[in-house]
Image (cartoon, rainbow, N blue to C red; front, side, top):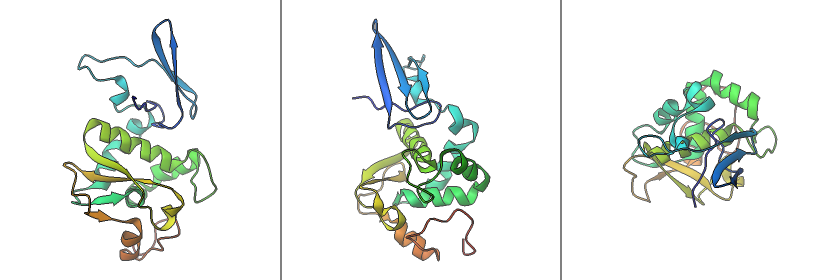
Length: 184
């Protein structure tokens, strides 16, 4: 089964596929964007290209830096925290646009968007990602969460949790802050 990512909002959870006379059309229920995937001259789908808001806002390159040269799997919260510290204006735009579960429960959020962008980077082979049941601190409400690492992927047991990272940086691991904390 092919995993589809919306080229406009990078959401991958509610993509509907239609076939009409053999022509494939995809539709993102999140941002209401329809598109027809095509193969580019290099044989890759246009879904693999960095497009939409993620490219416009420079999110992909920023996320690569947030994963950094760590030789560990990083629980997703670490990456989002690093992103909001380095790109506070863009992060605030995301939270205004899509909300955040720390404000209220929502199906799609700034975290969903960033996670979709991480997924696209993994599809490109720029970073490694895995879905894992280890969720800690604020993120423990999730049944599983993305862990990311530089390529090549580190051994399974080399892992840094959001909880350990937060405590090590003077943060409350169970609370998600939207402003830059004084200790960061």
